[in-house]
Length: 131
Ligand code: FE2
Image 1 (tube, protein in one colour):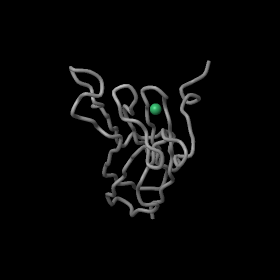
Image 2 (spheres, rainbow, N blue to C red):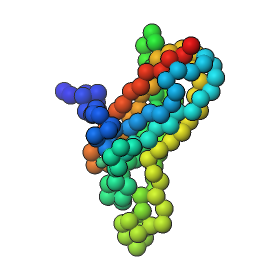
Image 3 (spheres, rainbow, N blue to C red):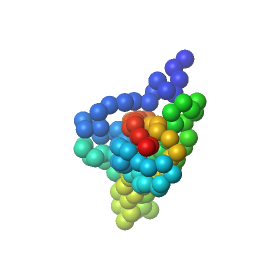
Image 4 (tube, rainbow, N blue to C red):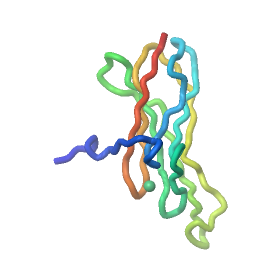
């Protein structure tokens, strides 16, 4: 039986519109807060319509030598033009990006997972050095 891990897709975010991107410094100071922005569609735009959109992006951190990743933040995008008069008639859209403030005690890897309501799960990772 195929597990969830085998269903999470990976690709180059510069070519594939579903891959979340993590934007933050490559190196940070221990225990000093810095901002991490997770976006999607940075190089190739993803649609944001009632029928086809990004529902959420979740950001994780896996510290060196740790057994398990920790969830740092979760961004839900819940307005995609829905309206009583019909799809894409609404006045509000949430775009697929989110920022959170993070501090780390040691180096590790930041990981982001994103979910498209049509094209499933996608992931990305970025090493981060604490010194
Ligand atoms: Fe999609």
